[in-house]
Length: 224
Ligand code: SAH
Image (tube, rainbow, N blue to C red; front, side, top):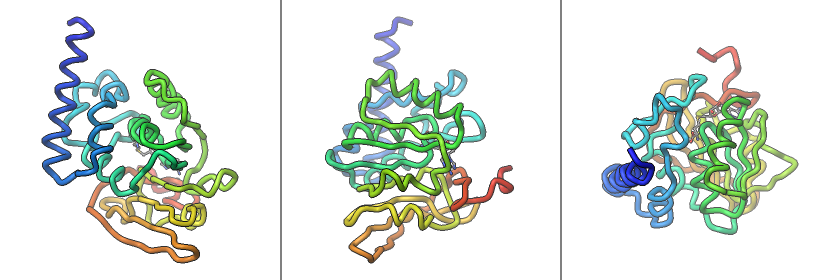
């Protein structure tokens, strides 16, 4: 198949995904809709799973990790309400797909991943999109990045038993953090907003994420 024909087929799947999985389920933020119509999800997947790029599900990316279902990516991005002046801390680079969405909407993204292989692969994927406002860090993201704090937005794409204090401490005044919180099987998306010294907590939808493994997440001994 020619490259332009296959690009057109992917673009059609992307448009259908936005209509049937996002808009029909109540995603209304036009910036989120527009960016998810553009970013090619298929380039972030390993060859053997590329055909699942626009399915309504999470997709394996290797090392027992997954790229989240498109609806969850959209809902989280809508919940943290990014604007073009924001500096964002993302925990759990994974494939780099969510990173690409954030980097397209914000001024800068600092993305932390604990698996070196995934981080290197994500860097390559993101180079193809020529996004030059991303900084990658290999470390335990449950501790955040105090040397670069505060952040306007913090997005955690792995689930922990509670919101790490290290992360809420690194939120700027007026800042917002979104993270899945719960047990190892099922979680709820939590949203935290800082107003001075006060933290205001709200909850959104149920979800299932891979574990945040680290000092302020689940211990390494819980890896399956
Ligand atoms: N947002 C990603 C999906 C991430 S899956 C995407 O769009 O593809 C969750 C990721 O969090 C995995 O890559 C996992 O290795 C990473 N992770 C888990 N615990 C972490 C920690 N303490 N610090 C940084 N990354 C972590």
